[in-house]
Image (cartoon, protein in one colour):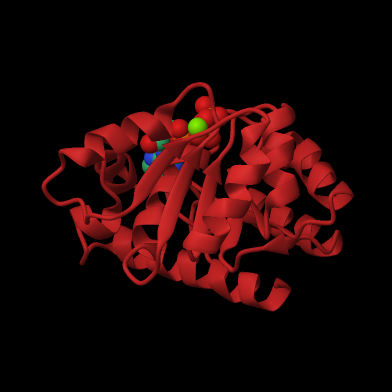
Length: 212
Ligand SMILES: Nc1ncnc2c1ncn2[C@@H]1O[C@H](COP(=O)(O)OP(=O)(O)OP(=O)(O)O)[C@@H](O)[C@H]1O
Ligand SMILES: [Mg+2]
């Protein structure tokens, strides 16, 4: 059975869609991956459309748009045909986001390493806890070291929340690749961004293995 990863965080612009796309591309190098867009904004769907005509895009990864009562069922079906299903959720906890979190093997919560972003994530973390789904925070657009980042790491550790040990920095490479319907591992396989992304994906897989 495949694993479902719901990328969720109520804070807008935290990097949910970008991360779903980047992780999907990297994982698809060695596995069967489906990407699921349940955000009415449809950014991941648009990325998928761009991807269809991007020469550097590896073939074979599905980008699906599903919402409403069919979602739970579709997630179950996709689990039987794919190794990983990444779900990009909207910046609100609506009924679809709830369904995605309920079905998830891991709820991945991207956040800028600053307290207001952790405050904004509380609703998502609470819902994951209520549904007894493991959640992991992931620092995105993170400076290598900052006072705020250290403070937040300490708070996260004190609360015994999971934090992926590697983070994504703020890099134009991520946004540029996304704008072309690609992942960084396709747009620039030898770049620092690609190396960083692979390390973060690996950290998530380790956690997924440990929690599942
Ligand atoms: N690590 C990063 N480095 C550079 N740009 C980034 C990074 N992460 C995200 N971005 C950019 O920030 C913007 C917001 O990211 P994204 O759309 O993925 O956030 P989101 O959480 O899905 O937003 P929404 O809540 O509106 O769905 C995008 O333009 C994206 O390309
Ligand atoms: Mg989004």
